[in-house]
Image 1 (tube, each protein chain N blue to C red):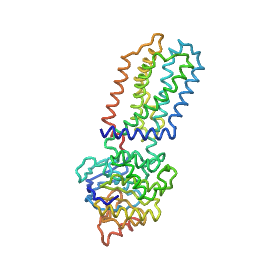
Image 2: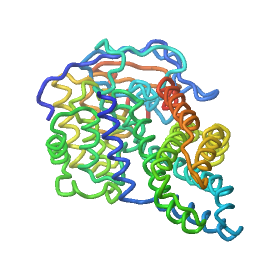
Image 3: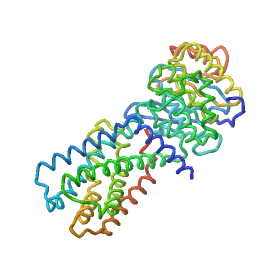
Image 4: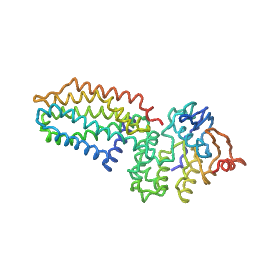
Length: 231
Length: 224
């Protein structure tokens, strides 16, 4: 699935604030992510990781500031694959029905073939006709990841994607993201806990209080960002 | 075209999940049935009395049934944050509203049509001659309830007092269309029934105005 090169999207956060009542989830965040970068975001609970990803996905409107995409499109939503804390799939539909439904909405040609292929890749081929509500947390997460990969997105936003995954699925996800990264897909992922996914990152950012307090590319500082964030 | 294609896919999902669970349809049908049966015992339903009270009673039952139906339509999308997934997937967020409106209208209309023979039997009235007029009135009335209700359902789903908020906002806004729907239905139940086109025009106007408002501002309602 990720073999074909994608049209990368870069994004720029310019003095972004997101406030919930009196609480700042993001405060004066200025961050530039180049097309094709794989960025790991670390930070303690409440540091703003999830809000940053939801703002990037345009699901949350910032209180102040601007988000721009380097593709030039005003709403590049169909090109964004997003894995959130919640699974973002319907419990009342089967795994394959969920993927076909979202594929059709995104205008993916041959939705059925695409759904079958993705379910085979995430190891759910034999359970594809089971309702999602009968799945374990890890299986739901695999459906969520498959949904995010529909339509070959050029920007992937992953919020703790390894949640609930067993070692085998984790290895598959790491390998899959490596291929996507190598085809030029821009990846922004928040990580919590020791994760093999951190090794994929070409850049690490640490958030605290809704702002960036450390930003480094591969080097001596890289692992210290995760260590300092308590991951 | 992308808007209609997306709306059709979304509507297909709404219908499939509802007919799989039958949660909304069974709830609303049981509610309307109880109201109609209880009221048929409270006063002697002669034909004249039925013509006076029947339409108001019927639309009141439909309104409360609709508020039961509308409440979960966006709450269900919050359980797994599927609303977020829909917003990412569709090219025009109005498609989400369009599909919800069509689904709510369809389910409400289905409830109304299944309850109509029960009402006719218990209240001693016949709708056979006026059936096309009744269908048109029910359609436009249900559409109006669904348009306003769907818009308010998305607002109330994000509020803390969501169970109270929806009926509280819904009833005042729906008063005009409910009054007109009742009046049109009364005319259709007269000994010499006729379709009051002025009322039909008002109902259609109500639907168009609120649909346009939703089309213009709906995207803001979906934001977190």
